[in-house]
Every structure is written in C-alpha cells, then in structure tokens.
Image (tube, rainbow, N blue to C red; front, side):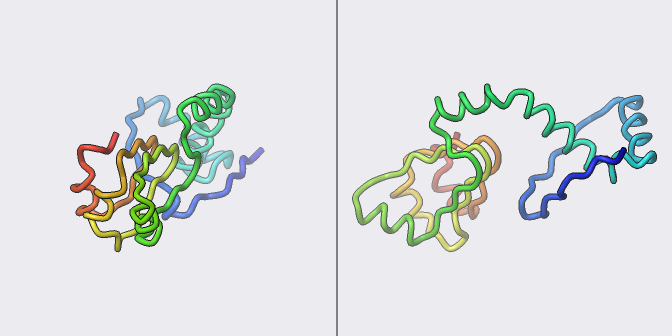
Length: 137
C-alpha cells in the first residue's frame, strides 16, 4: 500500500538537517524500496505531519493563546507605509512564514515593526534583518 502525499514546492519549504541511526535509516530505505514512499524526504515529511496531527488540539490552543498568525504573513513596502502613516507599529507573531518584501527599506521596517516572533522561518533582506536584529525573537 503506497502512501501518497503532495510534494511541497521548493519555495514553500525550508531545508533542515537531521541525524538518524543506521538502523532507522535502513528501515526508511526499505520502505522506500518497497514503494511505501517515493524517497526519504517523503517518508520524513509524512512522519512529521502525522506526529503533528497527534498534537493538533494542543497546537491550536497554543496558537490561539499566543495570538499567532498561522501560515504565511507577507509585508510589502505599501503595507508598512500605511502603518507608518497611521502612526502605529506592528508586533508580528507568526507560526509558519513571515516575509518582508525585498524592496522594503530597512529604515521603514525599523520605524514600523516593534517586534517579530516567528516559529518557522523569516524571509527578509539582510539590511532589514540587521535593522530589526534586537526585535527578532
């Protein structure tokens, strides 16, 4: 019985490195060879998703309690200019991907972003990262 999963696009993923024992790796390779999974990555993604699903209720409660945005939150220069014009600042809290457009000036980000908490990944230019260094958690 083959397990089918949709393969995420490279732009939707973050690469991680893990260390496995030889026996575990051999068992994964055996399942791949027998056609249960297309490759090692497919097995690992499926195992992680299944494990996260077992903790689904706890994850939902923590996301709600910490007021996290679940998924993708993207900020453009226009978004941040509107925040600046309103005289406000942002406290960004994301579980997933927080993305600040590459053309956002570092000073605009520094003027409008009070703090960033990301459980997942943050995509921002090196200049914006440097401007927000003390505010990224």
